[in-house]
Picture 1 (cartoon, rainbow, N blue to C red):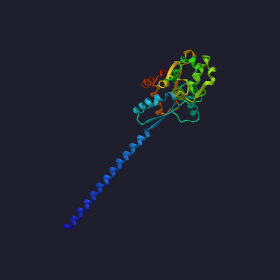
Picture 2 (cartoon, rainbow, N blue to C red):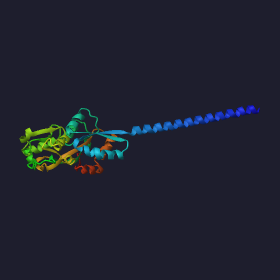
Picture 3 (cartoon, one colour):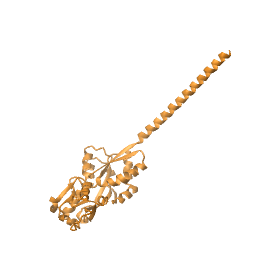
Picture 4 (cartoon, helix red, strand yellow):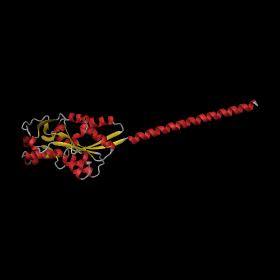
Length: 278
């Protein structure tokens, strides 16, 4: 009888242990399920915003604005594409999957707006810049002291007016000053403002015309003069707009137009020109 009772007690103990093991596995499974659920939620909240911006804006965005925004908005990643506004316009027309377009001139923004490729009521003429004549910092050519003196150079770097806004502004200014035709055979055209800046910085060109903000990024060039105000029909304005109604893109767009972002733009030499067209 005692032997029988011992067997019963031993069997009951095994049953209880099995139950505990089962409960533990169940709890572990529930925990795993919860973790998986939380991970899935985090992934679903992540988003990527694609910015197509003029080359002259690259430093402000990559060095400060994008890191600042991503720190304040974990889960949203911003990827930038920087080039001449004309090239970016063409890429957007060809299907570039961008969320925000930031142009260095109104011409490209107007074209995309007419084609229905931007959210019209989001267009904001946000920043103002200046175009300036530069020479290599080590240049000893003392003949070049003003925009009109560009005719005295043998090698001149300008942005391509067909697609580069700084080239369009340069051509307008030089034409209005009556000297554009005089330099025709001396000009090399860059595909964006950064290329023009680099040619002068490397002394591949005696002088060039770039944005004041780009000239300020390197000590390898010197600013000789700003374009005479009367040589341009309108200020050098940078409009920005959304290309869709994506929630994350709208959040980044609002940040770009904020006082916080404007303080950064001003650090890089831009002026506040916040004007909505509506």
